[in-house]
Length: 197
Image (spheres, rainbow, N blue to C red):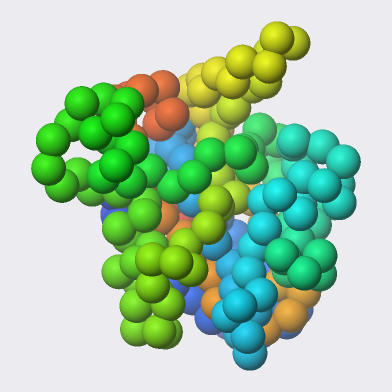
């Protein structure tokens, strides 16, 4: 049995996964980033750590066959399939503060941070629980001088990442809200989720 969810542009969703279940994250139109957070179902204090993932894998980049690790260095998700191979482990979720600092946008702005808060609040999670996500399809390149450059995603319509839960998890995914830069190729579109047994 497959459960399908469409995350509308600049929105988010939370799903519960049992160990062994598969989560397919699809770029429906191409050029769209999906931010992903994961928490161990029986202890939300154990959560995705991009730092531990970089450290354990020995790389800033992950792809097929790599694990996403928790802050306790336990594997949470295995990347089973990856049709793109360019993702980001460095950037925090976009937020009102980021839009103000980087784009001089005053007041509220749709953001991944706000969407994470909205979809995770019913599980008792709050602002302090939001950590840097796995930014699927975000095309971040690190230059030899250390400068970080965000380019348009390489994903085309239908490209996907297939993840396997290594334990029972709460997972939140957003369709990133940034249209002010190349992050989402200057436009925001939908993300598809499929949960498979």
